[in-house]
Each structure stands twice: as C-alpha cells, then as structure tokens.
Image 1: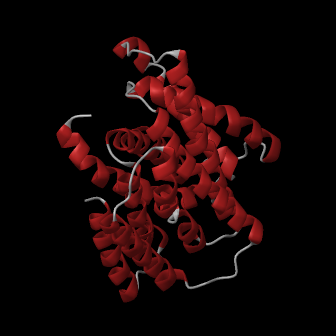
Image 2: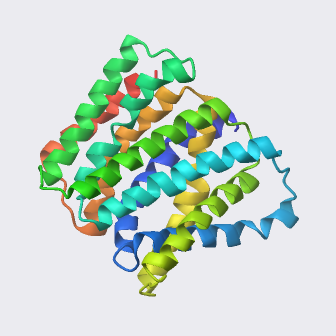
Image 3: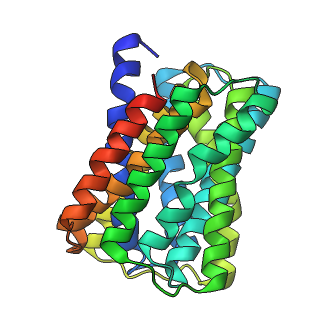
Length: 285
C-alpha cells in the first residue's frame, strides 16, 4: 500500500465500517442474519470473478491462501455472523458495541506473547481513554438495558472472532493482490453462511429497493474496500495501534444511526466521542 493511501486508510476504513452497523440493522429488517450475509458474500464473489481474466492478478500459493481463508473465516463467519445473530436475538446496538469495543484491550493483552509487540504506557493510557469514551457514547444513547443472555454470548463470540482475525493476520498475513485475497475470503464466508441460511431461514428475503441498496453498500463499502484496508493496515503496522481504531467505531456508528435510524445523539455522547478520539490519537502514536 502506498504511503498516501496508508495515511488515508484509517479515515476511510472508520467511515465505511462504522456506517455498516446502521445499514446492516436496516438490512436485517428484510432478511435473516445468515441470508443477508450469504447474499453479501455471493454477490462479492460474483463481482470479483470477472475481474480475474481482466486484471490477471497473481494468486497466492497454497500456504498463503490457507492463511487468508482462516482470517476470512474469523471475520466473515465468526465476527459478522455472531454480531448479526446478536442483533437479531434482541441485543441492543449499545450492548453489542460495549462488548465488541473491548477488542483493542484484548489485542493489547495478547499481542506481546503472540506476535512479540510491546505496548507502552502512553498506548495503555490511550486505550483506557478510548474505552471510556466509547462506553460514554454507548451508555449516553442507550443506557443499560436487559439483554438476552444468548445474544450477549453471540456478541462475545464476535469479539473473539475479530480479535483472533487481527492477531492471526499480523502473524501469518502476507501482501497479496486484493482481488484473489477477497475472493478467497468471501468464498469461505459463502461456503459457511449459505448452508446455514438455507437450513434455518430458507433464504427468504423481502426484495425491496432498500434491501438492494443495503447489499450494494455491504458488498462494496464493507466487504471490498473496508476489509482490504483493515488487513493492509494490520500488515503495515502494530496490531495494538490498528485495533485502537475500533474505539471510534461505536461513536461513529451512533453518529450514522442518527440520520439513518433516527437515533438521537445526546450531549454526553458528543463528549464521549471527543474522549474516544483523544484516546485513539494517543494509542496510535
């Protein structure tokens, strides 16, 4: 990745990834979680396949392809699948966000022993501020609601999936052309979610223009652009520093949910967003 793109990548990734939460919630009004994911991955594969004979990218060897597939499973099946299940089971967006935004702390605790990265005092201060800011935004918007236990368990599984993907990619990931890398990931995602969608949801969907718009965003914005940038940033930098970006996801998701879902941002939430921004800045130094 070129240096200008690497500098812009965090901003582009955060905007695309954060908006995806509100847009996915809209999509779940029209299709079950596995059906929505299966459609997303199948469309992504269909978009990528015609590009192969046109661009003739170099495919990774079998070992690198295996590592891409494992990372893809952790993100596309474990993380997205379990988070969508949590939403569908009745867990509030705030409940899922509180759990998932623990990922930077979890990565920082594991990274020294697994990938040999040290996390300094300033970065720990930044992580603590980022977590405080994210929690402030979430609690200011939703308060503490009674959440279904199975849904919370699914959200914890999603947290573990994204943490595993981040650390696995840092340890085993290699620079690969984005077209074959994405093709492998989404083929893995489709291979797991399509049978589940057929077995549990019958692949039923409410085919409205809104669903088509949701799928277009999830395929292009989330699947093809945001995931490519995330994996490139992990390979180019320290996982604790990259993971700190996830503290800004709940505040930005809340900001996007304001116009898309009509969920207002109270004054305390704006203060939490500013605190999360300061924490991420310190953690990424």
